[in-house]
Image 1 (tube, rainbow, N blue to C red):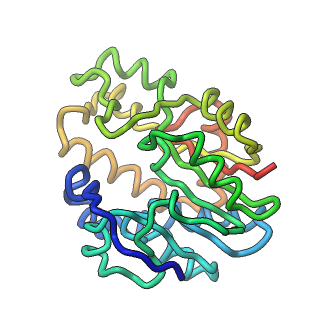
Image 2: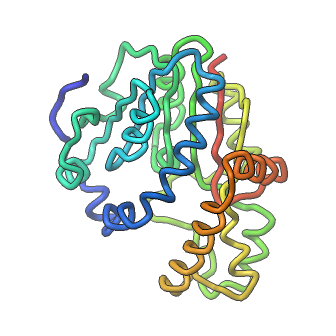
Length: 253
């Protein structure tokens, strides 16, 4: 177990107000893709050791531990630690301060778009993985065909631009980045392409209530599917370069 003091990082308080409440409301749905992704990793990782980097309130780590993984997380935000009651399997660290790891899996979910030193992070992740270890990277998928079509009719143009995002990738550019840093993409899923709602007349870009209704439809649809169906659909989206998010499983070379 890593020790350490929380850093003066108020990312969650300043940029994601209400995130813990929403996580609680959607906990049953979130547990579902988390278990799906863990199943994919389990089929490829050499062992059951897992580190979640920038783990937020620690829900993914909690699910992984319930599935038998020796999982723990690091999260620099003192706010996240206070609000999650600092579970013992989450340590308050930045990834730059952690060394000497040989994990079977390292997870970076909705993290890499926020990092300035992306090359250094991927070097660190690769050096922290065991031989044939798996990196799970989840990042927004930008510039897709559906996104560009929806942008022509959306009330808020370029709604995906976020003041905390320093990096934007499409599928080809993200794959190229991983390849350059010594990773081989071995599986990939696309998350639900929310732009379809805009094109269908449910423009959520300027209306949070419409956004909630759209997301509830996605939750209900995916909860009614089997894991095999969800993975099949996710892989089909990825094969077309579609999906609001890229869920990429990459092996250390």
